[in-house]
Length: 483
Image (cartoon, rainbow, N blue to C red):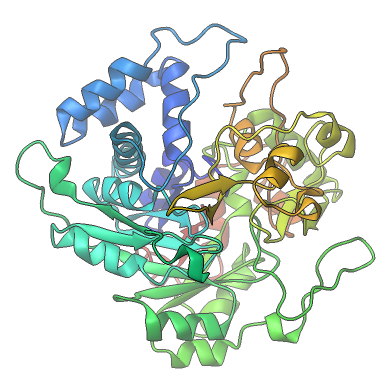
């Protein structure tokens, strides 16, 4: 669910109910810093910082980023340096702390597991982010939007109190002239600990996949244990895997998916590891169907995204819930929006970047950079470019001008979705861009008569309503709140 929609409040609510609440790990350092800049409403960030096992690190971050009473209305948020292969110690610490705080808060008030979801495409923060989440006792790590073959090894290394390594995917690195390029990222927790390293449990790892082939590849080639899979169909929100074969579009301009893009559930069962089904499974009937096929349960995103506990802005929730009640919600699978090149699902909503005039009226800027593409430069150096940055900048870095057409700055728009929009020097405010699944209009099923909102508990109760009582209480076995 993008950035900060599946926040600690939502994950806590779902896990309290005996299911698996999952927080979004994407861009948590920026989310955390902007919460501090807004004055840490409710004092929750400070509560998490006080529990962080390296107190000097927590103190440094608090002193640098907390704004008592919150920044002035209309003032911009403080910009963070964009991530690079060799991040500064300050950025590494910020990733550790922000991931710790989010998981720590999600785990409060219950003893059930909590998960965290990362994007393989956002590689540079992986090591520090995962270590911070493990310090907080995260129970599951989920990862998709790529092939996360080396994440199991990272989890094992950190659990063994060892340094972990991760190879950054660098465009052009395989060319002979870049043979001296160092793509390896490394994090040694001993270099950051303030005393003996804490003992850590290895979280379970769930790979988010789009095909049987990818699932089999993960089991065969991953550098550690894969504990299960989440299969996301092309109807799921957020990034979708591209269709297999040559890209074809329907009359509306959306990618066409065919038989090759459908998973064979019987083959998934034969792999012998638990799996969850996702994309259009947000109902009691679909949960029952998934269990009957041998799934451990379902992953649900859209339904929880509009619950009261989610981080989505209240005005965006209200407008899209109103559309759903009227059966008028529209979701477009945009083949161009994401700088990753993956199709990206977008709710059609006036005033957001889904509108052509809003998109065209925004000055292109790349100042967060989570989706930047690392590419090989001469003399062993790595450059960074984003197809949503200013066109002339991208082309100057060797990018193709045709790759900039229709690209949207997901980093800034997704932060705007959760009320953390950046204000520019000219007074303009970054617009939102809401991503949801194709089943947007089905969220009306969770509303009680006469009500215009619902809770995470309403969603869970509805989903479990068709199950025998003894089956509906197995902790962490049935639902995964998507992040």
